[in-house]
Image 1: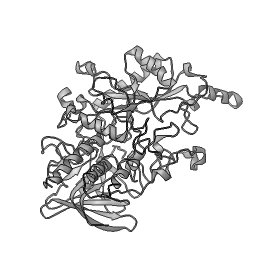
Image 2: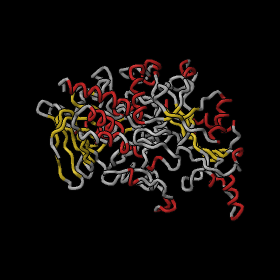
Image 3: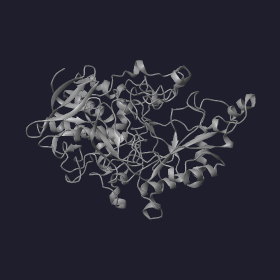
Image 4: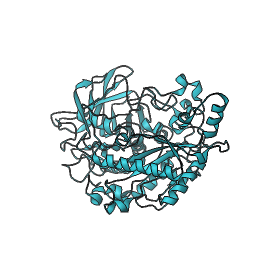
Length: 562
């Protein structure tokens, strides 16, 4: 392996792969370092295997926490030899995938745009901070990203839910019966219930085929219909001949020269347990928000005693995740006894309920700021995907029991709410001075607490779900208590904000292009740079920023300024 490159990219997920794609197409030599193993979706994806044929009938295990066939191997919230710690009495669950392509192999592919309010939250309600640009500044970049990765959806003209350019998104799949049932209730209540934007193809794109609605996206997608970097951005970058990928490379720290300027990284080859140093003009960190923060905090030197590019003291601070409710399950007799037909669809919700009470919030009519979305799942899923609460309803035994389950299967819905949290001094990660991982690298220690804002938001989530269930004459099967409605931080796997961008170097780590104030050849291309986190899934915005910021980086290189 060469020792010198134009750019070193740490991480192969959404931000890292987009950065490598942009930079290699601009003509630069890129080395990508991935801590996890190599992965080939074309040969490894279990597209049609049944849970009954898997160990433990496909049940979740610590190394496969979403089930046996989930596209992550030796990853999860707990990984042997790679611990993290918590402050006393606090809990944050940190998910790490540890394979080429990262979380893009198993994410839900939900791809909403952030809107004008989302980029200027402090200007709207006085809380948190604003981003250093407005929606109008990056709208075209969303269009470019959607065209490249392939996103289906629909333009509904909703407040703070921006429409795409007409040619930027593909047609959304039709709603299923249970979704039309829910939409009818939402229409009566004046609540939007609209198609989800997802990074799944309903029409072919490049070498990728359209989805044929037969298998769950979290398994990965061997035909490339469901976007993941291992079937799109990485192969396209490799075709340029400018990308070298090294898997099994656990990066220990970013190296700096005598002046404190980054000039490479040190990594551990897990196969041989040997240390290596590689050098480049620019270092890009895209290892995920918390791993990027850990690398920066562990990269100390005489010039960076508190961690690399951390004179602001903001590295590791401002940790955010979407507040996510525990599941609520309800049974709807009106859906009982329907004809038996395939309702699988595009492997996720076709409709959802985005936040709609912006004006009421602006008038002070709610006791919390920021919004949430409601996600609901139902229908007849393939065997092994779960019975959706029917088992909790079942009573009796023998033929009558079987008939009851057959009749009620598909008549339940599971609701999950996902909200926006306010940046808090109570939520951050730091280096634990006493604990190291299997390679001797100091680990992260998490501090976490949901604020009163999120708790009040959660009560509203719960009440909205109950209102919808009542309108449809449903019966609650599972309902978390009001004071225990939110899952622990990290459960949503949407953590961002640990090295936020801004206009003021004393309050932020990077400028609007992810370029560190203290080290102009160090760029952050993952969710660490988020100044806030909307109630919307963040991956499309990570991809968009990486595309935009990598073009800026390439321009700086071409001008000789880096």
